Image (cartoon, each protein chain N blue to C red):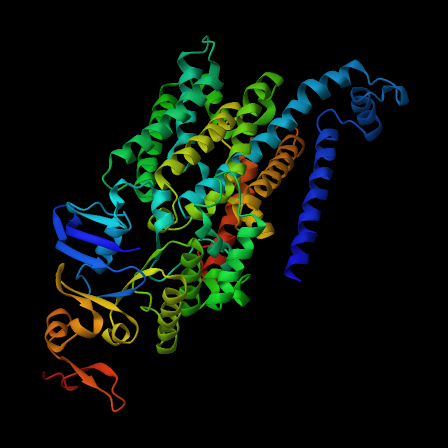
Length: 344
Length: 261
């Protein structure tokens, strides 16, 4: 019975995703109806003979603004959700989020630094945010490696330390920023938005997210063992320290490239793994693709809401926080009732 | 496969827990490790399993130095049944057992149909096949212990370490676990080192016994020979004595149930 409910839910999710994709392609400040969608897409599939061409203005909006934005939201949602699954498994904590090692704080600092001092550099805000996100996690990892205790709890502490330092750095930069120009740019960047999505950003971000996600999906079964205590995992023949490094590096690259492209995306990496776990269970070989699918669909819907609900676009993190925070409250209540850490 | 421990000294930081331990555990035998809490039983198991580096001494399994082995090599030789058993995530019992096959599964793969069948067979042997799809964390302490035992057996290592496998079990499950171990040692020829608090379980099921006190060996050898009044008093406490039931079974009992001994 339980299985059939899960199968129905999975089918519902697939149907919902396709519906959301269609709605997202169609909705926006420039509405595009279904016949126009056919006129935009079919010629690219070699079926242009059946429909006439769409107006050039519509073609421009659709192919240069909407499609890259949708691709970006799906890629970022999938990538961050997979990273959430991985970090929750590595830290043996269902409430761990992908920014636990300071990647988001580092990226925010890099972006703020670039906005204030390096506006003309070729690396740009995206490059700075990516580099500092990776740099922050590297410091947290190296600090933990120098400790005599190589457990994940030390890594959590060094992650908190690094996050705090970079957050302080962001605050200093915001304090020093020009309030009429730089400060607003920094604040909007931190709140995250897909309105900055472009083909150039898709070309940089998508390969990292796709390659990283495929790698994590391939090595998903090992994550089951990584959720056991360190001594158990070692006794089962898994070199915990080597594998932890692989998972942290791959997930960090995914999160850093995602955050660098569109800014902070709150809560997605925390709540989507729970939804995916509810659908297919904890076995990571199944969980990772499910989280990718649910995460991509979730952020696609959130972004569609963010750009259509009001006249001016709402930063994506506001929407994801409004949904994510109550959901976390629900999980905590459920955890108390179950007396079990696995809240998913 | 035999396990030889020569001049082992080990501990945590500057606090040494084990002092100059030299013991040989014979192949295809059950060896009980007996001692107070803090006598060094778990530390000894951690050293054998390569989880703790000794300060001095050497441990070999069939002549191979464990300190020179890689993790997957060691897991092919030694399996561990940890105390208790808890998973932060809700795996099914079968998924927990399948983790025991990590050394046989390629890093990019998951267990194939053959491996799944093998795991199911082991579950059937241990008596937990009906629990295969049950979430591990919802099982009772005894059932969890049996699932962990199934995982170690599925790992298929010739040496098994069981760290206080009976600590959360009721009387009947304690004997069930030990009876299963007796059977597997006989059928599969594995060597088992089991840390125990109850000397009666050692007398009933173990071939050999190592009695520890404050990180030193009090006595080591065939269980029937080394578990005498003197050694038990020294390793476990002064109020114990060895007695015989009317049917001739040797049991360890308190000398004075009022605790005046």
